[in-house]
Amino acid sequence: MSDRLEEYPRPEAFAHTFYVYEVDRGDGEIRYYGEPLAPKGNVVDRLAPLFRNRGYRVTLRYETGEHVLVAEERSVGIDGIPWLNVGLFVATVATTLFAGARWYDIPLADDPLAMLGAWPFAVAVLGVLGVHEFGHYALSRHHDVQATLPYFIPLPNVLGTLGAVIRMKDHLPSRTALFDIGVAGPLAGLVATVVVTAIGVSLPPIEVGSDALIQQVELGYPPLIQAVAFALGEPLVYDNPSLMVNPVVLGGWVGAFVTFLNLLPVGQLDGAHVARALVGDRLDRFQLVIPALLFAIAGWQLVFGDSRAVALWMLWGVLALVLSRMGGARPIDESGVDRTRKAIGVLTLVAGLLCFTPAPIVFTG
Image (cartoon, rainbow, N blue to C red; front, side, top):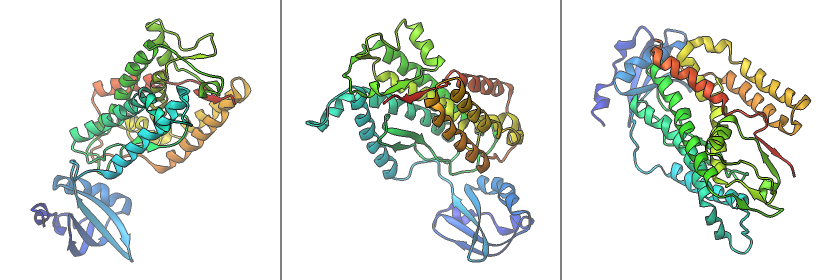
């Protein structure tokens, strides 16, 4: 039994919130059996600071007819080898290499290992996603918030992945911590997006055949990507249909698209973390505006724009509606953030608009 378990919070320290009739100390956790003396939704909010100061994360559960406060030891470090993270990353490397081979028009029928030639695409996509998630992870460690390493999500689609996520397994100590952790990913991702795009447009275009993936897909480049290409005097499209921009640019496109979606202020998305840190619970009154706007984009595309993009925005409208009902992160200390963070937050949300394009990807075949 660790020394910390010997110094666990005694029931009398929170007797006004939770009546305890039995305590069970196990391996790395303490279980308090009893009855809430406050509304169940408020019990954890009231007790989280006490347990956090002692090195625990506390949750309230209902098991076999009993209420149980479960206090688990907090640890911001990594215990052992995170095999699940490693396995998902390796799988995502494989799927992005396969997707990249399609963009490079590399034939794989006779030599599947030829997909290794698509490594620049894989590095670009995984690099942008990884920088974004490690931005969150680094600030989680800075604020002593327990978080997982990134989980990459392999998917055999045109990009080879559905993105990457980290999971916070802790109470957030303050709105300042919520802001820093939430904004770090998009800001880091924006920097990576600009760098990858600049590298990509500077590389020579590639020549592809009539059955290449680029002949079946049209990409819409947001203002941020267009601005980088313009600043470097490089094109994003070519008059010759057999030429396409180097697939490394797609890493920048992924970064911009992910940044825009993540900065939507709904649910557990980064934009909601930033907005909640800025305006507090007032965010709850405005979250339904986001699904409405996404449905409006779909409607505009149907009537005036590219009808092929309608399904994408309808899908995200539904997802945003679901996310808005799931609730967001709530910090222990509800004190507001300073002026500098407010300015950074507003600029970050505005920067997200530079990553928007009405028809980011449509399929022509």
